[in-house]
Image (tube, rainbow, N blue to C red; front, side):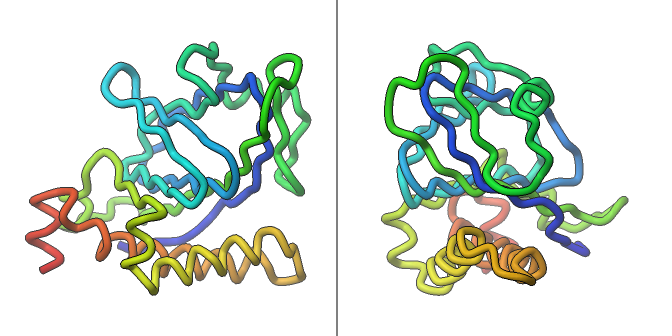
Length: 191
């Protein structure tokens, strides 16, 4: 697979907010809710509500929307980045209007697969893998990795990015093990 972590950032989104994330091939994107709630929308197909401690992985890099409410009009990620002046350092803070509620804090990132990577595992992955905070209690290794990622991202000490890159690569492996039953094809490969 030649999996490689490449991009990580923390967010602080205050309602109202809605960010339309474009498709990005050969990528597994993830969003971990550290505080608050977040809806993840895939067009009209799915509306997944994430609470604190929940994690979603989008293995195919499909377009999706992150928002405080499905009723909030989405703004393209590139436009949000331009409006906020976010350069990749520090906290990515955003609010589309007058703040009106609790801030949602996320850790977001993506892992890239090698160009031309062909593996039965990649073909078996579903549109998304969901790890709830309840599921984490039964996935001790994954829970520890996620806790370490959060501590590293919020600590910001030298070497943080290199550490988080390695931790997210291990995280992906543990997610596959933890979520194998979410896809019959994936379950066959993992067992």
